[in-house]
Amino acid sequence: MDVVALLSTLMGLAFVSGLRLYGTVLALGLGIRTGFIRLDPAMSRLEILGDPLVITIAGTVYVVEFVADKVPWVDSVWDSFHTLIRPLGAAVLRAVALGDVDPRLKLSAFLLCGSVALASHTGKAGIRLAVNHSPEPFTNIVISLSEDAIAAVGVWLAVLAWILPKIYRLARRGLTTAFRRVGRLARIGRPASPITRLL
Image (cartoon, rainbow, N blue to C red):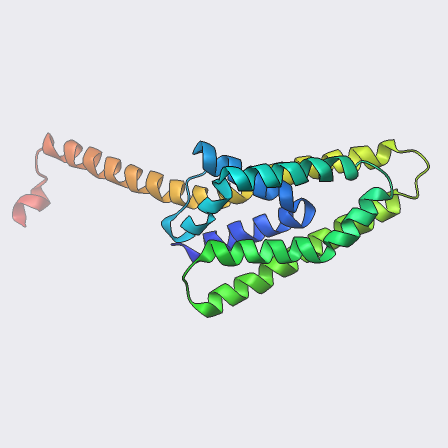
């Protein structure tokens, strides 16, 4: 497994988990359940996210979060409760995703993912606290919907960060093979040059 691609994916998922942990679990769970996301055997432990019970719980809490996040000041209270939950949830998900690997890599990913999730959560909570001082509620709703969109797109981009290098390698291998075959076909019908005859 490509460690760089895996860590890129894990960091991306940690970032969106800091914004919407339950939405991230829900999106991954639905992707795994429907077969849209096919996990690498090394990350097969994440298949648990596709379990109907996990999807139901993540979906239910996400709906609560979705509503709470649109109400000024309620969103800040919700964020304060999740200052520990989101980074820890992101770190645990990534540790589970890695499965049985070198403990140093697992611990490093745990710390990195927790830190990335904490940074995105802190930024989100700070922005929302500043917006709550606005007298009208529409700014809060627009920012919340933007965060929802960023989290949804972020999950799929993080998954693509893992898939695209594999697609690139497969396409490169296919093109290399095709060019070799075309080169061989081009040489078959051509008479040998005088230099080649001497050799």
